[in-house]
Length: 139
Image 1 (tube, helix red, strand yellow):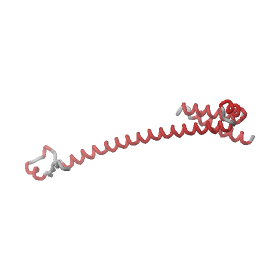
Image 2 (tube, rainbow, N blue to C red; image 1 turned 135 degrees about the vertical axis):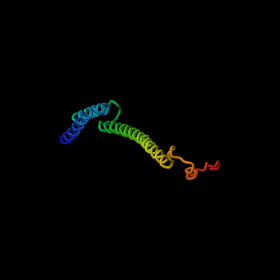
Image 3 (cartoon, rainbow, N blue to C red; image 1 turned 90 degrees about the vertical axis):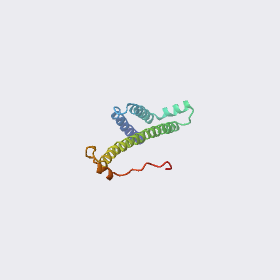
Image 4 (tube, rainbow, N blue to C red; image 1 turned 180 degrees about the vertical axis):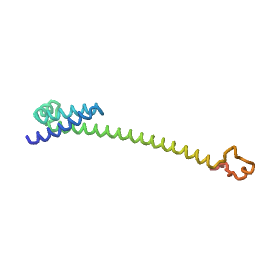
């Protein structure tokens, strides 16, 4: 009886959390509500899980619950992995964009500072301009 009360309190807290998160992620919240409700039912009526386990060909109800929990855990881990992978790809694209966007103004600023203004260019200034060698074909 004590274990049923403790498990019920934990499952009811999950129910409240799922209900609160419904607006943010309706699919996850709905699946959490269904799973938690089934958990509460099996906590208070454990013989039903044994009957269901016999129906599907598993020896005990506890084994059925354990197998179901393992499958759901694998699905959750897979879902989290896919979301994390998507986030990493988005961070890579964003980092690339920021790097390119910040490099272009710096390149333009360096070019403007090193070259004299066209209106002030005099014949004598041509001698002071830096000589840029063309890249060789071997490099």
